[in-house]
Length: 259
Image (tube, rainbow, N blue to C red; front, side, top):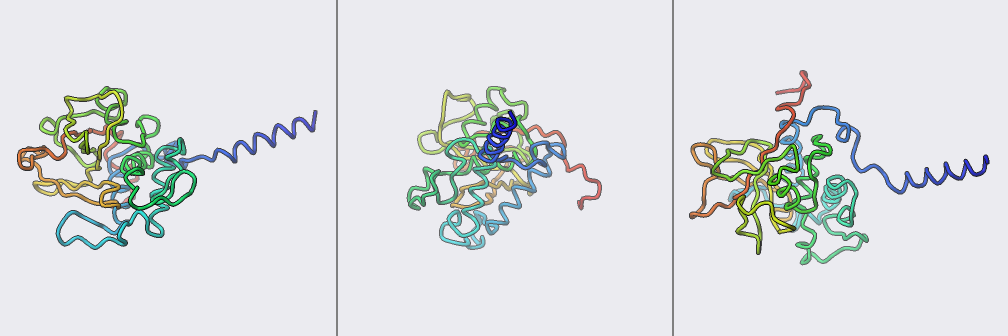
């Protein structure tokens, strides 16, 4: 019996080693309420890590021709995947230049490994959303959850009916899904898209940070109407879906934090 007990303990220990925890305790518990300030700060931290790129004419130059494949940054993309979707599925093993087997994929094939949804999932996970956010390797997963009411944290809005705030998401469909609007939601399955996290309102514009934008974490500056809603460009809305994120708190509760 002692030998059998020891064997069981060994098996359990090996099983624990085979399935390491993907999410740090401070986010899994979490240590503080899920709050808007932390989510914005995390997104901005990642933007600075990639060199502070923007869509403005005089933006800093990228750190590399494809930053997602640069030393130190391809690993960071791998962390977005691993932590964002909690180590589950083959996508969790991807990096900015490796597939699930650790093989380097050609730079021309990077569209198959698009990581913008992993970036959003990472930010929400690290900010402490817990199990209430529908983490997904593609944007359609949590956009559909928002539209159908399957997440207590998310609500989908048409851009003319809701003025996005810092910490909310703004989204659009790509390629064959480029015409998707809130009226089409929820859809039955996957469709290609992109979302960015609003990080600031500056006068008649929003700053929004998204992953896999020019192969980096990049900031877009987006015009708004006087009422704060998203404005159209040449009669078409570039960001036709707004996802309201219902945080537990507006700010980090630490009274000693700098403001």
